[in-house]
Image (tube, rainbow, N blue to C red; front, side):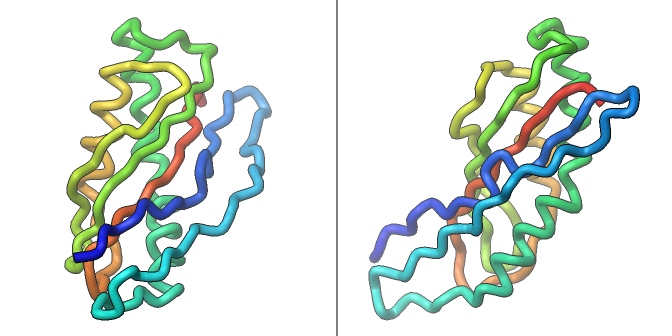
Length: 143
């Protein structure tokens, strides 16, 4: 059985910006890296499916942004900080996320990391011909 490689979404793709006239900053988002299967028996994932996954992260990023104030309230994060968090997960053929884990963070916060994992674990992604591993990065800060 071939090993499935991590695919990279738009790393650090979502920026939540402080209020008072801030507005959303645009960050150049790299295209996801699509790996060819090592075993010819594995079914290819159409590029449109990766676009749908990316779109799901972008549409639902506000649910993850809510984790920042929770971490501030816990005392683990200062309200003026900006934290980058990289999440890895497996997306099953039925679109359900499993094996969620924090791959890295610019500042470790157990409360923030737990909240990010719990938020994304409730999402529903597009259906796929086979399970894939995927990663996505968030930039979190005060609104």
